Structure formats: C-alpha cells, structure tokens
Image 1 (cartoon, protein in one colour):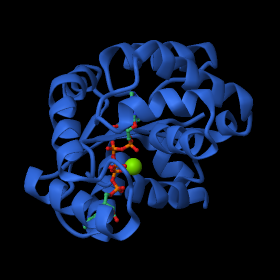
Image 2 (spheres, helix red, strand yellow):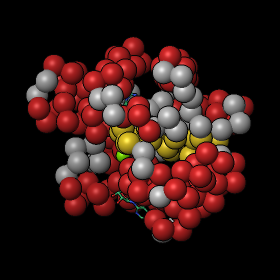
Image 3 (cartoon, protein in one colour):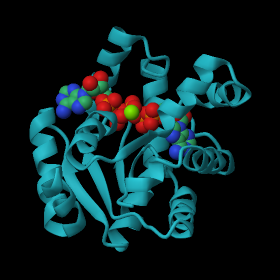
Image 4 (spheres, helix red, strand yellow):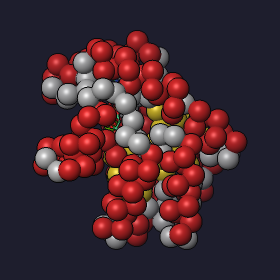
Length: 202
Ligand code: AP5
Ligand code: MG
C-alpha cells in the first residue's frame, strides 16, 4: 500500500492535483471534504453535524473525523489494496498521529506528504471564482477568511511535523496545473523510489 498525503491551505489545489496523482500512480482518492459534503447532500445525521462546522469554516472535531475516516477505510477494502491519496486529512497533529496508527495497523505508512504552497491572495481568488461558478457553500468571503485563519492556527503546524519525519515535499503551487504536477512528480521520484517504480509500471 503506497500512501500520499496531499497537504495545503483551502484552495491550494489538493483536489486538482489528486486527479493527476490518481492517473500517474493508480491510487485511490479520499477527500474528507467530499465525504462530508456527500453526507450533507444526503441529509444524514453526520451531514447535519458536519454542515454546522463547514458553514462556519471550522474543523469537524478530531474524534468524529477520525472515526469517519476509519469507517471509510474499513467499508471500502479496495481502497487499501494499492494505496490512498489522503486529501484534506490529516488537518491536526492529533489526526496525523491517528493516521499513522491506522496505517500501521494495516501494515503500512505515509510514504510522502505533498505540501502545496500558494500565496494567500491567489487562494482567495481561486475560491471566490469557484464559489461564483459552482455555488460551493463555503466559498464566500467570510467563510474563506475563517477557513484560512483555522488553517494557519490548526493545520499549518503539521508542516513542521512532517518535515521532522522527513516526509514533506515542499511544492510551489502558484503556477499552472501542469507545471505544478511536474514539480510534484520530480520531487516524489527523487525521494520515494517506490512511487517511481509504480509510475514506470503503468
Ligand atoms: P475540503 O473540502 O478539504 O476543503 P479545503 O481544504 O478548504 O480545500 P478546497 O477543496 O477548497 O481546495 P483544494 O485544495 O482541494 O483545491 P482545489 O483543487 O479544489 O474541506 C472542507 C471543509 O470540510 C473544511 O473547512 C472542514 O470544515 C471540513 N473538513 C474536511 N476535512 C476535515 C478534517 N480532516 N478535519 C476536520 N474538518 C474537515 O482548487 C481550488 C480551485 O482552484 C478550483 O476551482 C480549481 O479548479 C482551481 N485551481 C486549482 N489549481 C489551480 C491552478 N494551478 N491555477 C488556477 N486555478 C487552480
Ligand atoms: Mg478539495
């Protein structure tokens, strides 16, 4: 099982670059934001709880979020056959520790963390654009501001956590989608030989 965490601020391109990583390495994709939005759309109990946090730009509490992720991994065994791109999880040190344990129980680990680093005015521009085009509920200026504040206080500390584990790949995420992906691939292939061989097989 080869696992990649795609990490970055709201609007940094985690979902966009995940699509490319799926093609390149044949991995499965779990976006915790998409899992929660699906529950909101279906009107489940979890969806009602999640909506009350997402609409304010706050994080869902760690204990609940960790249970949700564990449930996704358990309910879809094909996810863990080859490996997973974790998009939007972990977002706190507690979640990172939980992910480490979850993967260890499955005889695996996080192989690389792709950290997309994008200027703040570009992040806001991308999210406002998407809000106008798709109507995504948390892409309005007030909620965006809070999502960025929460990112800086609760999620950014994870950058140092993964640097200290030697797993962090710092990627400039300011340019066009294809150039960013080239940088990601070069960085991964330099430092994670398992991913290079997986790409060569395809
Ligand atoms: P989540 O869905 O994960 O949202 P997010 O982190 O705010 O990130 P986005 O999905 O907005 O952006 P992205 O980085 O995926 O960028 P994208 O590729 O879409 O989480 C939503 C909420 O759920 C959270 O706020 C929280 O409440 C809750 N939640 C989720 N996970 C949680 C967890 N683990 N713990 C607790 N709570 C959790 O790109 C953005 C836009 O820019 C798109 O329109 C795209 O087309 C465009 N774009 C992408 N790349 C480029 C480029 N290079 N140039 C120009 N435009 C680009
Ligand atoms: Mg996303």
